[in-house]
Image 1 (spheres, rainbow over the protein chains, first blue to last red):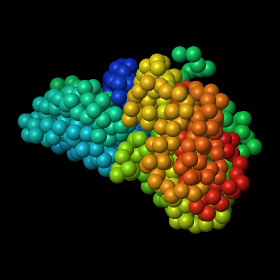
Image 2: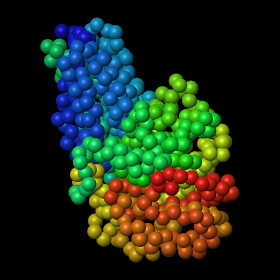
Image 3: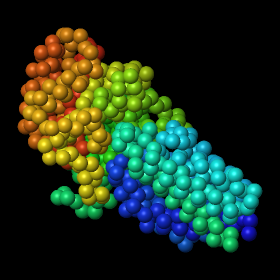
Length: 211
Length: 330
């Protein structure tokens, strides 16, 4: 198939949330090495609450993403609340009203999410943030979308993982870990890691519905 | 971890609940948002509102400075985590007396984003917002990159001056200018002797080895500029004065406000030991201490350590600093 229906897709966001909640301890552990170690608990709290609120509801993908966005922005705070909150808000806006989501729609959604993150934060590729995952993942999807939705999702996931891993060798230049300078080198960035989880689980969930 | 806890997830809500009960003569919880603490003296029609906010775990900051001629409303975040944009927006609305609101906060990535979003949210309600971002921590970036420096205990002086200026009936631009002048006149440094533990994490998020100290440590355990053997209180005080005053470059005869705050687990008597030496050293540099504040004014959970903040005064700052105020912490 080349597309999925937009309606009745709350489960996709529930599945993304499941991955985040399952990785709560791991995300906090990574964050603890160069941050204050609460990334996992804050993310799990936000995504977990969203999953509870959309569970069993007949919702479009954009409506489910808006619920998640609202919780991240109004209940979680920190840096990740506004960054992911705005990302999901603008992703939802990009596909609102569409009856189906094909590669073009998904690309528009990804690019809107990227623009939202870049609009509120000031990070560039190489600063050791979630941007290091998001930018190459969006570019990889766009570069492969002519080959079909599923192959483009696979390319996106591979690029996201590569982007996440690229943060190991980077020195943080923005956010709290930037205060560490050279001491931030050698470990994954927690935001880049959670962003990779979001994108890969989104890809997996949509991919299996395409099959 | 030996702590007074129920469920770590409820810690912030329970802190705020106890706080508003204990200080009901001065503050109350916003009926709209359980993460916004509002002064009983706010809003006041025609007066500029003062708002701040930040992560929890720094008590009495930030909530403790809510009150008369001080901060009108405070947005409360999770432990060491910025409040939500919505909480900042609700705090701005609660403080709004129709003359605009000054949001006076510290230079952290999350706070910068959430305040920016909050200002956008309240613009729809026609509330004018001005911001001042505290950056008094000298060890967090070189003097040439002041805009990168963190805000620490100097924020207290920024709130005091901003709140007092608003109380004079000054318009928003003047309140903003006074708060900016206050933080520009502040320099701070922290020295850490022991780490702190986020209750939800359960173990310290950094280490300071026995017999060591970290000079220039931040309010969340951000690393300092030097880790070295712990020296006598006298030597540590001298080091703190030197770091702050070398950055400040003040002419002899300048009058100062000095604040020595514990980071949570340092005995208060040791803060006085530090202060004894600090004031002598400042006098040696030809400075006069107009007012001193010594105690746990801005903490970092149970971190062992202390911060020194020095504000250079002129006639305006001195008058605003001395204006009467009433809040749980000041």
